[in-house]
Figure 1 (cartoon, one colour):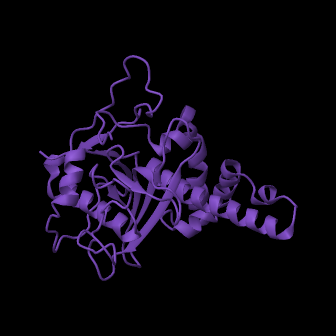
Figure 2: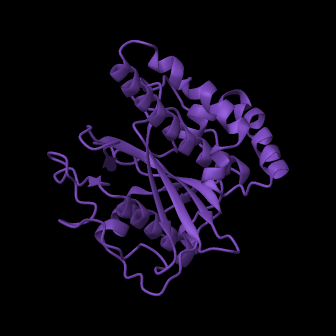
Amino acid sequence: METDAAQPRLTPFELVFGAEEMDDRLFPPIAEEAEARGVPLDDADGFLFLTSVGQLLRGIAGDPEESAGAPEAQEAAELADEAGEIMRQYGRLLYHAFHFWRTGKNLLVLDAALARALIDGAPAVDDWTLTVPSRAGYLQLPRNLFWAAPASGMRPEPADGFFWVYSDPADTVPSLQVLVALGLRPDRPGISVIPAEGVLDDVSHWAGARGRDDGEDFRSTMPGGELDRLYSLETATEVLKLASLCFWQVSTRPESLGAQELAAPESGPADPTHLPPSALPFRRVAAS
């Protein structure tokens, strides 16, 4: 399996919100309404109750009532529950995409060799306090290296990367919200997401946390996954641990963060099995 790529791939932000500068039409009204109503932008619950957000979600995900229809009552309820979960997933994605846009579209691309070193080398992270490269951003993982199931009982999909939003309000403890994006493929119209959130009250980071009650963190749970040296994300703590390890690398080894660059345009016919390169400026994270 391929586990690295020379160029950053098209991001979930571009896939869903970036076409024809859609983000510059959709997101400013959200910021204006939040300011007019006094809703803190890092308040995820308050964000989802903004009128402009609700209208946008209905336009993206469809109306749950229309999805449910009017067949049998039980079937309609099940369809409504399914539509409600779709709305929640799009709500999480919209929240992270908004902050990605608001903070300047900070895109980091993690090198495969460094990813393996952080997971297999288990660096000692003791009294370090979580420090993020920016208040929000997206870190793209090496291709097909990390896998996760969107929900219990579902088939694992490759993790493209994760969004993050770091909040440090004056009247409460800091928190980190992470959203893993799964299953980005040219032949698939949508994506799957996995949320994880941690509060920095009695911990200063999750780099040394134990993510699984049984077994080694990040150990592949897929048949043959260990032979290909793949990793699985099975718990929210593992997601927070992965984010912490990446942020630790950037904050304590600043030389590992490269200069901003743009992906080179594709030469020759596009590979139908791969996403095209991202058009966003990015910075590589690699061992020096």
